[in-house]
Length: 405
Image (cartoon, rainbow, N blue to C red; front, side):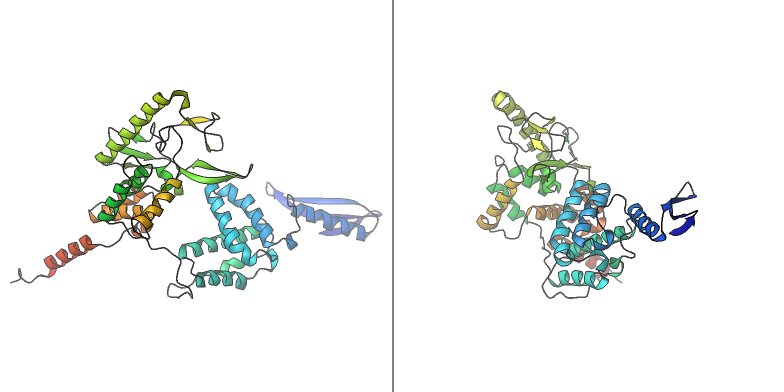
């Protein structure tokens, strides 16, 4: 900032961002005194530096800054589902600890204490890693391009060592695959006519995520001649913030994992029977049949306000069978059948382990599950008696002395 006298009045002058590589300046004169020029120049420089902001950078709280971060960064760089997930974690884990502080007063020690406290309360490594990422990306964004702080206090925080032991055991849920006997009991309790039958089977036979199983459309997601299923979308229970109401909403699968996978002939025949029944019901019900549509917000509605969809998971009258059906089914599985700890995701583990045990390619298993990384797929594989017996046979062939001379 420069102040100088031109004739009988004073002028302020400061440098702007270069345009086309050429230096630019802002200046204004006509002030009677240097003090007036300094006051006006300081105000003009502040407005220039903070264009578009409705707060004083030095006073903004962490809570208010995260509102800005979600709007300014996440909604531009992340899809809606990811942003909603971040928003939930920020609200639940970050703001209760540091939301009240001014952004400029946050220290590395404060952030490290936040991570350490979550670790000692038993949060999983995955949750800790996500929270650390939200701290690192948010504070880095505050440094550049916003220029609200000079350095990021999150740049030096670390996750606890793998050898560290939390005060409270980890909250991570251990998922074990269902045995053949257990799944046979589940299928007997939920036969083909039951709304939960097909979604449970899709997890066990195809490794589908819950939302993916309920988003399948019979007019486009199946090639019955080749026995191929196309996994294009998922359904999620999402808030429409404009009206404060929740809807089942269509979105891309997790990690945008659009894919195709082979079906066994028995599952193919079952789905063909279900589709034929849907078509027959539509004719028999006539105008009383519920037609489903997806509107411009990707919400599933029964009003003709968008594109008609042909969901596989519908009742006899065409109404949507939602994932809440699985919530009820799991209560029956836990308390009536006595299969504790099993959830829908456990059946994805079952699918992966069954394929691995029977010699399927790790790459194909990973593709079927829609994983981004092979290391994720490895966490879905569980040792069992068949694999252990196979190893014993290999050891016998390698080290037996009967063939040695």
